[in-house]
Length: 295
Image (cartoon, rainbow, N blue to C red):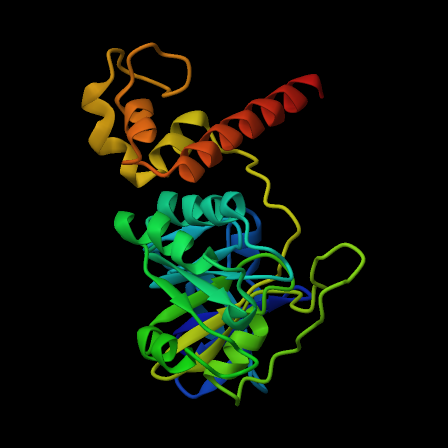
């Protein structure tokens, strides 16, 4: 039988579930691929040799248009960085880390704030003031109340999208609200530590309104293993327009005496929270490199 092209919907227990037309094949990886180092992720398009009873062997991964390392996904049209307004509290640093990873992967991203009905006074306005001027769309909603859901649903229609964010912010609940046929498991937030329970165990693409939508496992913290300081700088898109004001080239925008980026922060042209996130990421990268060097 001739080979088929399909879309990897999920990877679970060593099997890859691949959508081909109206059928899903349960696949293993062909031996020749195993002999070489290969990367295969949810969202990849592959060639497979179909077998009996809906099984198949993946023989080739087709070229990707993009690849997101955390959460691990390929060929996304849109990344949805999802946070709660409260329980757990919104974190500018975690938001900037997620958006940075999408920026480096060249994946368009937007920001979703769930639990808008619980938002502390001024939080939503502050988030909008930070992210909308630099080109990130901000959507607010309440998955439990059903408010704001329709606007986000229209934005995601026909696209391959992945939701990512900390545990307990309501990623699964938001997806359930967008499409009730999905019925993803949801979990409560621990009162003791203020964090969510990990109800999503692996990334899975689900058919949604002429496209696909994916929930991904939550996290308590997001480490930046493998990121270089130059990449952290490139991930903050608004910095570039002020670099002409830097005396030194390259400029790290940290200790240098004449720096256009630091001047923009001082004047309010760059949000202080974004610059603080950049510095925190540089410090994390430094500590990770030190730790790696001691091994």
